[in-house]
Length: 566
Image (cartoon, rainbow, N blue to C red):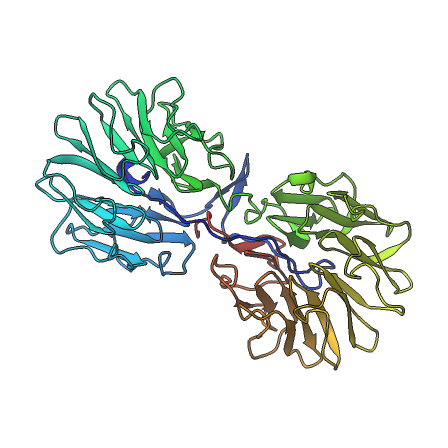
C-alpha cells in the first residue's frame, strides 16, 4: 500500500485508544507525554527523527518501518505481535503490513516478523526482487516477474494471475501489479471496484485498503475503488510517486513536496511543508523521508504529544494527547492535540504547569495565582482567587494547594472529586474522577470515584503520590512503590526496588530510580512502558506515552505510534 519503491505498507485494524492521564503536576510525579530521543517537531504537528538517516520508509497498520543507510531496519509503533522488532542484519527493501512487516535480504530471500495468524509472516522458499506486505497477507515478485502471495486468501488475494509483473502492491483485500506493458492487473476483493483498475498504462501502482492508485507516464495520477472520503479523487497536477492506504492517498510532487487527499480525521492528509524523497501512506498515518534522510510522520499518534520542542524545560506535564512544559525562562509551551485550545498557553511567567486530559490546562503564576484555559463546561478552567503552591488538572475538575496547605478543588463534583477533606496537605494530585493528597504526617487521603479502589489508599506513610486513570501510586519512605486501584494491565503491580519519583498514567506507571534511570510497568502496547536508556530528573506518564526531563533540561518521550527511534 504505500512504501518502498511505491509498493509497501498495508491496512490496519482499529486500535482502541482512550483518554487517560497520569499525574505529575507539581513536577513531583509526572503526567504523560511521549517520543524517542532525537525527535524534533516541525510545523503542523509532525514527528521526525533527528539523527541517523533513512533511505526508505514504509507506513503500515499500527507500525512503521524504515531502512537506515547501512541497510538495518528500524520499526516503531505497536509491538503486540513483535512487528516493531525486526531481525538483525541488512535489508534491501522493507514493507510494513497490517500487524506484520517484511523485508528482503541482499540475497533476495524474504523474511517477515509479527503476526502469523494467517501465515502472512511465513514466506516461501526462494528469492524475490520485491516484497509487499498487505493486511493479512504478503506478496512478492520472483526474478522471472511472476507473483507469489501467502497468508489470508479469503478474497482470493493470495491467488495472483499468471502474468509477468514489474511491480506489485499488496493492499487490504486486493493486490495490484504492473505488467511488462505497463497495464495494471488487480485481484482479490472487488467490493468497491478496487480490483478493477482504470485502463491505460502506468509507471507505478499502489493498493490501499479498498482503493488503488497508479501513476501515468506523464505524472498524472488515477485512482479507483472506494471514494467515500475522497481518497480516489486525485488533485490536479503531476506526481513522481503515489502511495495509497487506509482511507487516504498521498503523492510527491516534482519539487519534493507532499500532497495528500482523502480522510484526514487524524491529520494523515496534512503533510508538513518539507521536501521529501519518498512517501508512504499508512492506515491512519503517513511517513516520508526528507531530502536530508530524516524520517517524518504525521497522522494517528501524530497529535505530537510525543514530539517536544527543542527547548530547555524545568518541568513537564502531559495529559491526553498533548504535553506542556515550563521553559527555563518561565514561559509555557504545549505541543500535541489542541482541542479547546488546551495547547495554546497564555503569555507570562509560570512556576508550574499541569495538563489535564479532558481539554483544559492549568498553571501557577510567579505570584502564586492560578490560571487555566481550554475546556470549561464544568468550571474546571475557572480557578478561585488565592495564592497557591501547587496545582493539578484532572478530568473536568482541578485541584490546588493554597499557601496555608489546605486543598481547594473546582469543576465537576459528580463523584465528590472536587470536595477535598478538611486539613492540610503537602502534595495534591488530580486523576480521572478522583484526587489524592499527602498529609504532613505522610498519610494519603483520596476522594472521588472509587469503583476500582483508586481512591482507597492503604495505611502507611508516603513521600510521593500520583493519581492515574483508575489507579493511584505512592512512594513509601524507603523508596518502595505501592499502587492501588485498577490493575487490569499490571499498572498497579510496581517493579521491585526503590524509586525517587513515581507517575501513574492510564494503563501504565513509571518511576525514576536513584541513579536517574526510568522504569515502567503495565500496558506497553504503544511502547509507553518501554523507556529509553539514560538518566532523567522528572518523569510523566500519560495514556499511551511517557515523557521525562534530562539533566540538561531537554525532553525525551516514548510511546505512541508514529515516531521513529533515533
